[in-house]
Length: 330
Ligand code: MN
Image (cartoon, rainbow, N blue to C red):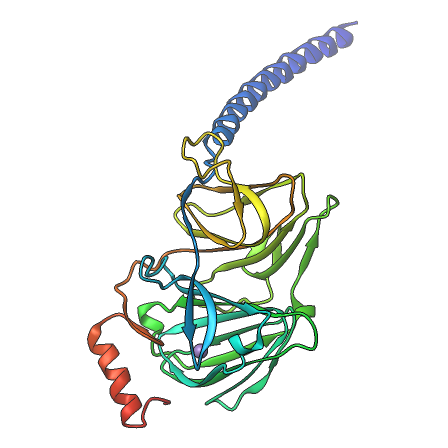
């Protein structure tokens, strides 16, 4: 009996102990839930800061393209220095291409949607970037290259070029070049028909094909069929852009009282977002395809002149001198 009582007491003691533990655990759990709920509430959906209408410019030897960054009204969105959208049904708008020209202080990312572009450079690289392929180049201290769009057998030539700034300490780094074939670019397919190609950065745990760009940008190609939505996590404090190039989508924060948020944005437009942790997109009656581009701003002084982007005016003068003296390519 004595032993039984002891056991019962022991049992009671353990029960009390457990229940106290459970109570404590419950309390802790509730505190956690409160923190979590507060956290969820705090996630800020980015509002639209500005919608940029690309302007037509003639570049290279006479290529007609749509430019939305590096224009008279928008110099840059740190660390993005330029964004060009080339493409035309008329080969006369692009066949003259971009003959041999220099670059210093930047990295470029070229993404081809259709057609192809032949290229060669002062490092001895040469080849063709075709449909769905990506080419990235670190000009660093100096590169000379040629980019010549070719008339596709069918359809139209179309693609994009983004310039990403190099941090001050890497302006004069060694030039690099890499071509990434479309088959190497990871593709995420959602059950609702959404297709996400991760060109650079990371999305849903999938690492992009281009990993070595110094400013570490995120560059994804997103397709949303009609009547689907997507929430894209982005980092707070980062510059975030969406380039809408097919269809139309509703972007921004529905709680915003700005007209841009919640109103369909029709291709072709560059959307610049305010700060926050989430980009919300909804394709309503039509599908939408856009590029989501994001990176941490460098917050360094910018001195630019055509294909050279440095930190000071003296460095720009030096680039021009080097070119004159044939010491540009190190
Ligand atoms: Mn170039």
